Length: 285
Image (cartoon, rainbow, N blue to C red; front, side, top):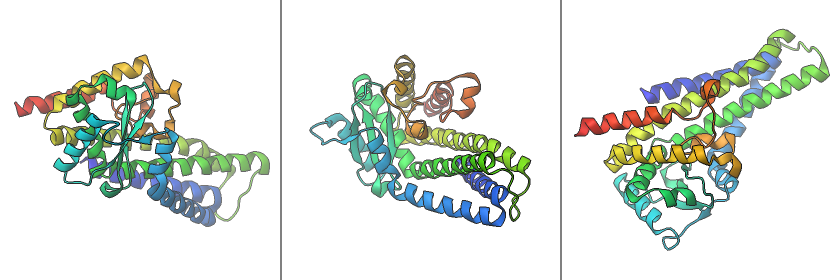
């Protein structure tokens, strides 16, 4: 069900991009939007992992530098029947982790020094199982593509608004009226962000379930999520330079927000995630 929901949401995101292009510039605008998406997704496919690791100043760690992290990842990769991912460490006291890479053959996991300090071995295993499930489910690629399309929509909307401010009304071939163009330029980025966040939340639930099965102990991940949630509330990552465009990658949301802002949250509520994991554990006992 999560896979079908993700496919529908990705299709909706792509359709929104094409409709925005059509509204702005008619048939030509549609072709430009399509070309924009192809180029940006090509870049996301090949380079998103390298970009995000550089953004967070992650450094590849040897087994001697991070023995427990290497041990956990190696054991889980063997259970998941996937190649050993590259292991990175981020020098940051805020506890969190993420996985990246377009497929299991080109995957990497990154953990902050903060998470390595506060989690015990069982909890770290639960978190890494969650992250490796993201890799085997291709969530790392799906997340990069959805973020890229949403970014393309925002960029096109900004171009349209700039053109209307400085170029006046331009009803080119099939371009529609200025009111429709302005409305699309305002609403499309909001709709794109909502769809992107919905995709991210759906994949988080799937990774929780898959990670719990991979490590064999749902409560290990549940305990880790509660610790990470509380620690990120006390010491949120924005102070250390978190990037909103990559928030969906992390085990727990590194950005804080409540109320209306939860619509744009990349993660489900931690309470809901923990509840599902506890239900899984109860079903096993």
